Every structure is written in structure tokens, then in C-alpha cells.
Image 1 (cartoon, rainbow, N blue to C red):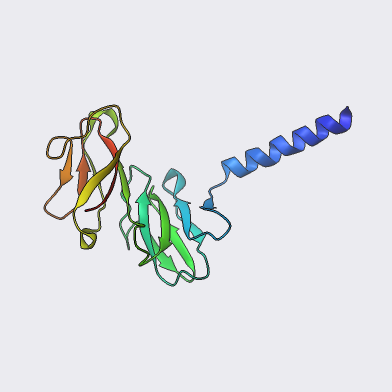
Image 2: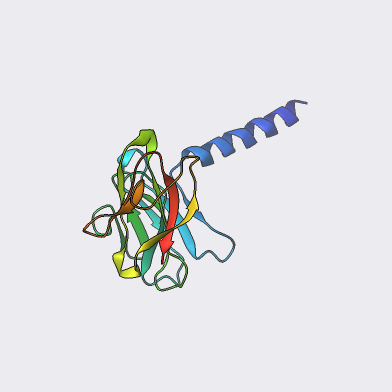
Length: 159
């Protein structure tokens, strides 16, 4: 009985340590994308797959903006994030990778980075119970950034 309790306690401690640490999550055994997170606004680096010579942000998962060169970048086989940027990163140039999740919490207007070189955004998946309507609760500004408001939460992909 004592051994069983010790094993359970050790498993729980290991699981808690894994959940508490800042992490990079690879998707599958031959990972091509990595989730990298700046927690509490702190700088963090994540190792990328060896095949990734250039990386790109394929999905932003934070409310904080992810802007290349300011809140994320690449250096020596790693991607770095800072100032609350959290996103999924993948090898650049792979078709169909790019999407941005943009969320209006508490009905506030939020601006999210959008790579306008990819084309104009279209709503791919509504994540909120509040309806997302182009021009009313989501759109793009003059600089090509994506914005959401009025409780709209959605995933956007290039048109």
C-alpha cells in the first residue's frame, strides 16, 4: 500500500511539474509545428524541428500581439517569444499552415497581427457564442491588421 501511494504521489508531482513549466508542444511524432508561449510577459525560447530553416507564425493563441521582430523571432534553430505572445510556429512556406485566432474579451476591441502578404482574412471558425460579422465585429485596419470587437472570437485564414 505504501508503495502504491508513493508511486501515485510521484506521478502527480511529475504531472504537476510538466503542467506548470513554460513549454513547447510538438504536434505528433514528426512534429512540424511548435506551440511557444511567453508566460507572464516573459521571454521564452522553444526548439524547432531540425528541418525548419525559416519559421512563421501559423496561429496566434494569445490576446497579446505577436509581431515578428518585436514579440517573436527566430535564432539558431529556436523561435523566441516575449511580452505575452503565444503562438503555433511552423516551417515557413508550407501551404495551408497560416491562421490567426483573434478574441474580443469583455466586448473590447482587440487588434491581432495579420500577415497581409498572405491575402485578406476570412473567418474560418467562429469560437464565440456571439455572432462575428465582417465590418461590424471583425475586419482589417488600414495597416492590414485584423481586429475583433463585441465579443467576437474566431479563427481566421487567408482568402
